[in-house]
Image 1 (cartoon, rainbow, N blue to C red):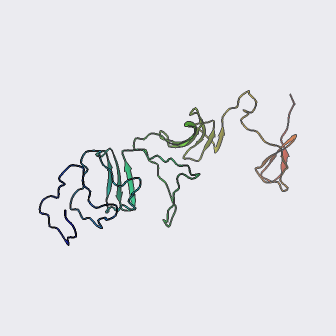
Image 2: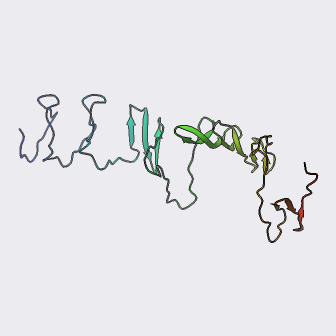
Image 3: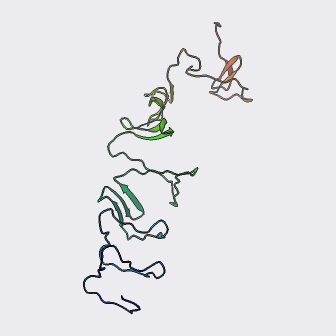
Length: 231
């Protein structure tokens, strides 16, 4: 045994007399610092671990440009400057917290989070319930329009780069373009809820106070819209 030595000079290798039987240090007497020039390897591929469920490392320090590599490049986590890039894998967050993910920046300007498709395909945020999609919000890459899709991926709301908004219209030709309604109740193209008219009439305002519908013209004169014959 080597015991209570100031130093030991080893010219080639320090090898145990039997495979997988001896320890370097113990739970009561540990080594303080280890310096290695090249690589620390397990005895077999996917056959060892660093730390355990009861003895865990507190910190991992990597140099500038450091890479964490899984399965020989199948997935990598690479740091360059102030950025960390995950490549080759999906980033999944599973948490019992009410806020499973949060983004914060100390940048002295507007903050932005980029979602980029390198294949010119649509990019969507998908809201799910028990694993089933209920809503999609994203970009239609073919014409670069913002869309909101329902659970069956039908386009409900469309916003074009020219600031035209469509409701049930995928190619709106006005600031607000509403698609046709249905004969079924609750599917009218536009519906007002009765309320109280403004105290001061505002030009361009439309108001509904049962049973009257009003429109205020450019001279700020409120006029009742002709009801016509009732059916």
